[in-house]
Structure formats: C-alpha cells, structure tokens
Length: 496
Image (cartoon, rainbow, N blue to C red):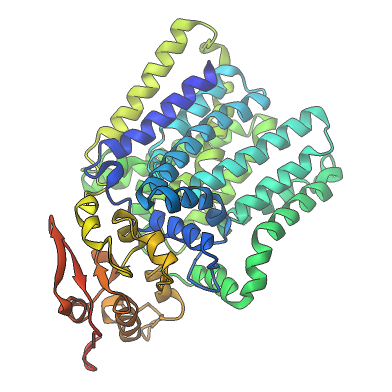
C-alpha cells in the first residue's frame, strides 16, 4: 500500500500540472519535448541523429521515446505524443516509489523512506519537469535503479548486481552528459578497499551501456556527435543569474511566483541552508554517505553549468530525497507508523494537498494552441514546415512529412550552437534575430515546404524572414495563429 500511495500522489501532482494549464493535453508542451519526440519519430523513418539532424544530447532519450513515436505513426502524432507524456508522468511517479524502495534497502526506517518518496513526489522541481517527455525523469529512473542494485548488492553480496548498477549509471549518462558525473562518483566510490572487488563489474556494466546506446550513432557520425553532445553544450553562455537559479532549484519561484525581489533572494538561500543541514545530518548515516556525495557533486554541476532551465532542478531530486530520508531517520523513524490505516490516509492526504497547492497555482506549463482547428487545412499539404516540431505534432503533420521525405531539422534552434553559430567580439552569441547566417538558412529551410506554421516567438525568426515566408498568403487561421502558403521566398541582402 505504501508504494501505491506514493505513486498515486506523484502521478496526481504531475497530471494536474497539465490539467490546470491553459492548453491541457492538446496544447503546446514547449520546445524540448517536441524535439525529443520528433527525433524519435525521425528515427523510425531511418533518419539518424547527428548524421541527419541536430540533437544536442546523447541518443538515450530518442531510443526511449521511439515506442511512443511508433504509436504516433499509426494513430496520429497527437496521440503518440500524449501517450509519451503520460508515460513520462508515470515514470516520474515510479521514481518516487523507487526512492522509497532504495531508502528502505538503506535501512533508514519505513517512515523516513516514505518521507523521501513523498518529497520526490511533490517537490516542485520534480513535478515541473516530469509532466512531459524530458531527459530528467528518464535519467533519474536509471540512477535510482542503479542505486537500488548497489544497496541490494551491499546487503546480499550478489556478484551480478554491481554489473546492473554500472549498466544503469552508464545508461543514465547516455541520456544527458551531466549524468556522467554520478557515474564517475559511483566508480570512485568503489575505489575504497571494502568495495574495490566490485569496481571491475561496475565499470564493465557502465562501459557496456555506453557502448550499446551511443556506439552505433557515434560510428555513423563521430565528429558531428562529439560536437553536438559535448562541444556545443559546454560552449553555451550563462543564461540566468545564480540567485534566479537558486529560486527555481529550491522550488520557491514555482510555488510562489509573485514574491518580491528581497523574498525571492532570501527564501532560496534559507532553503539551501536547510538542505546543507540535512546533508550534514544524513552523513551520520553510513548507508547514506554515497547519496550525500552524489548530492554535492550534482549541485556543483548545476552551479557551474553555463545554461539553466527550471527543469534542471529535477537533476538533484533522487539524491536529495534519499538524503532527506536518511536525515529523517536520525529523528526517529517510529514517529510515523505506515502500518496503521489512519496514518496512511493522513500522510497521503497531506501529500496530495501539497501537490494540489503546487499545481493549482495558475501556470503556463502547457499553453493553448488551436491545433485541432488548423489540422484540417494542412491535411492535404505534402510538406508542412514549422519553427518548432511541436507545431507539426499539434497539426498531425510530423509523421506525414517524414514519410513524404520532407526536410526536418528536428532541433531548429539547435543549429545556432553549431553550424549556424555567430559570436560577438566578447564571445557572446549573436542574437538569433540578428544572426544573418541563421536567418538565411532558416528561410531556406522553412521555405522549402508547401506551407509554414509559426509556433513560438523564442525561435528568433526576424521580421524580414517572417515577411518573406508569409508572401504566399494565409492557408488557415485560428485564435491568432496562421498557416501560410510558401513561395520561393527571398531575403533582402541588407537584412538578417
């Protein structure tokens, strides 16, 4: 019953994020989720990331989303995409259950393990990242499975579980390179005398996972994959000040979006101090020292990372939740008795209320978009182009375009980190609206189809490029969005 309650609370918090937004399941889920889904769909048509289109991460996410993309090919892009989002919500809820399971194997007590699982279930950083297809819930699941294999192996002495541990951590690093840090921590952890006999097995498992997931794609396009996954990621500029990152990392800005500047600065610092105290307390539990080290290492990655998005907070969720469980055990795990039905109902009700408070704040997690109204107008169009793959998904044109052999960059703005990158004398990137090379390539790409759909202002399409692409007239229009016919567009040489 414990696992079912934690799963239900976590899933409820994630699905409410969508249901309380303006768009619901038929709206726009933003840029990244569309990129991962489009990459998986392109793979089902034989197009390889790095060789045939831009992908700024290792291929693990593409392989994980491919089954949902296959559903979309047969039943419609919107159905496949919705199935993928629901699947990742469920994966996030499973992660909360895995926290309880790992903490229980660490012998911190059932009440403390439940506290850790409920933190993962309701923490804004996790909820805000796990309501759709993202890198974080998948990597977290793999890391938690690896930790479960590790703690079980320490108790049982099983010789194969260290291999499973390495496989899971290696697979996590094959989703995003940030998870190579937890992998290195796990390997270094096995250098200690009492654990050294398992180092070879952990390393072998990790190597096998890295080779199996990344090897085929690297062989197809070694230079492109290296530049996209490593060089272009490390070359990003810093996107937000540290105080804003701390606000989103702690969940303060998500839960209380209208805080004044002083409170928005002070409260995250208070939460960070509390987390540090929690880690210090957790360190006194020998079984938890590995997750405390993981927390410190991953927090360092976040602080040093040049780019920042709110979903990055989920990167810390497994290690922080397990550290909290260990710290809670120091204060007496018998304070909570999950075996009693009344206590179970109270805990579940409080956790559900927390999730409701977090997700009931008016949000734009999924924005409204008239995809169902625009879709009939493009049903007979051979190649529909868009400045974001989310647009093609919402009008059910993605799989049809790929089947027709239409060009598809997948990560449209990702090219500005590599082939279309331009930098100012101080090393900062040229804004996309002023990047002449980018605008010319974008014009050629969007103008190569029979119709074009603009989805997001953040793409950086300049006014001149938009005007050139709108020259063919409006094909369909609804709620302020339009699909335009294309006609051999040209861009003035003196405009970006």
